[in-house]
Image 1: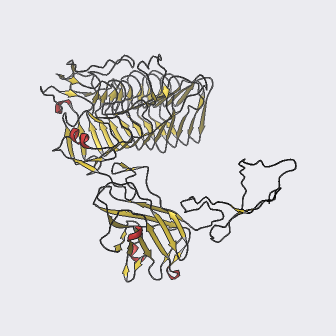
Image 2 (image 1 turned 135 degrees about the vertical axis):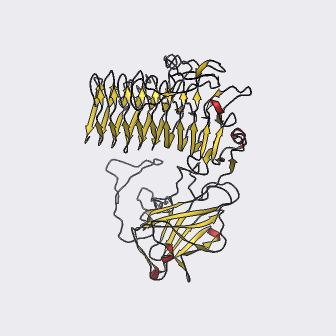
Image 3 (image 1 turned 120 degrees about the vertical axis):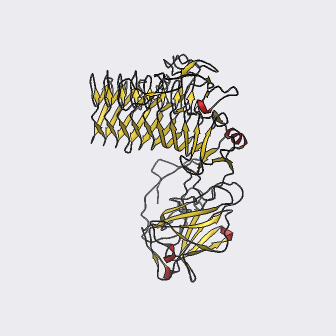
Length: 622
């Protein structure tokens, strides 16, 4: 009961919301009716509260009051292929918080595989390596390891074999096969119901947000996509022109080169996948293989992505080039040369101005040739990303060069929420970012000198399992270069965060030939390096042999966090911060559960150095 305090009142038409705590009973129960009774001048009728009817912890209608249910703590379902008309292996993973007994007539139904078909109603169940054989668990009459297809619900009914107990808190994994429909469709909503020992009704978890076979959410049951196929006998430019949004290109194994395979531009929401496995497809834009009609070598990047929600999966990119004939001398003085016939170096050597673990350098002349340069954007030698929601998965980038930034990959202005997953980069060369560059904002034409303010986005750029090695920056950031906005909103004294997250990745043997950050340089962004990432054997001239972090905006939430990672064996040959150098106007940096060792700086701070009177460095368990 609730009483209105003396002197107070509840006003008609006003919404009041309150909450209180009760303890659920030890046994399951269905939702109870909740009744509102009130006394008021003129009387007040009893009314039933509406129930929400929404799901909670995947339990159907789990938000209804006093509904208490057992549940499957794990109920996952996935598929093996997104291609129409193929056999599709459905994998089910179950863990319950209650025992299911066969002698209590326990039944489990997994339903919702819309448009799937089977050959007959008896559906064989297959063992998944490392888990119990379902033939000893589920039976259909005298048939062991068999379920029953229920056509009206597009579902599979499962019965326990005689004497079997499906144990609580034990993981059971098995598979069965359906046939995919002929047409593309979105993922199905799959539910699981049980009767007998426990009555449960809940939704199953699907891998909606991750790429599989190139398609985002491709592991989710009954997500089917229209596919175009490319082989070495076809032209990639033609296939790109034929594919429609929300479709995919499956490329067969082989090496693709020449004018019909290089300078590719993606302007639709599609995915491109190496169907024969990661690394089976190579796109090689070596100028010797890419000739114009007059047999003049053409140097161009491999791929540019202008659309959003694009996935690149399993492809090796080689020998891409962005911009003119040579790496620029200064960031803002990068002159783009289009259709130029200047003399350039066509060969490379292993020279890094005396540093060890050398990489390809175009400073050593061994042979000259005349080439045509066709790219107006000097960033992203092999891949330029300009759209949002981009995934690059299980791909490689080797021997790439960019005139300005991001020798292998440039994530350009406003490319929000981009993720690189299991990407390998070697032997890149650029002015900034010998491997990767990240411009986490939108800019005007004259953005570098500040005459047009940069507008920062809420960008999330994530690197998972990325390896950057043997890359060189002519100026700074031998491995990775990340740049946020240059200005502060004068009304709020803030700007929107650009978040760079690096997990389980390594940057090694990378070099900044004239500036700072042999490994990684972060400027005006929030950065996190975690989960066994390694920055090692990198060199810089000025500051930050491994990492150079600069917060120049005076915003407190621009932070650097290094966690469960290592920064080791890096060197600064003229400046400070052999391992990590931090420049903060305002803010903090934290290093926790990490190893900083065997780093060298000529001037000061062989391990970690910090500059800035209002900045804070926290070191925990490192």
